[in-house]
Length: 174
Image (cartoon, rainbow, N blue to C red):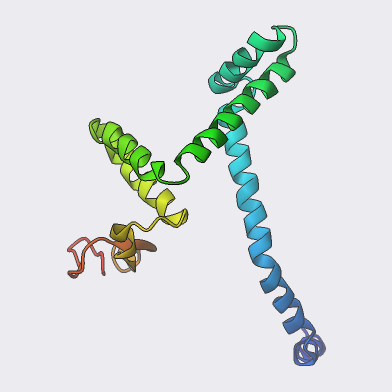
């Protein structure tokens, strides 16, 4: 860049135009990120449950029992509405006192199957943490930085499960 260009950028920065612009971006960033995450989730859900998938075909089949096989889109939407209504009804039932019992029942079922237990427990803990569940096991955990791959490796955030130091030979620091 030429000296005049640098001078122009310095004057622009000092005048507050860029700072004001960055402040506006900082205010909008949570909204933009939220919309991007929601779009990503909806795309994944459509890929897993949309028409043409096994789950989508199951929903369409359930709706076709009501409107007939010649109305594919309507049958799918009707099946989707039935699943959403059923999820809402289940939420109404377990919203109060039944919630702990229902979660305990599900935990009991999935804890008996080793492969599913390894997946279900961490997912259930994260979902319950995000849902505001008062689970003291998760609340007692500290957020720590973990390095994978030694000095030039990648740093990631993790939840520390125990109070003791977690410094390992693999280059992981707690």
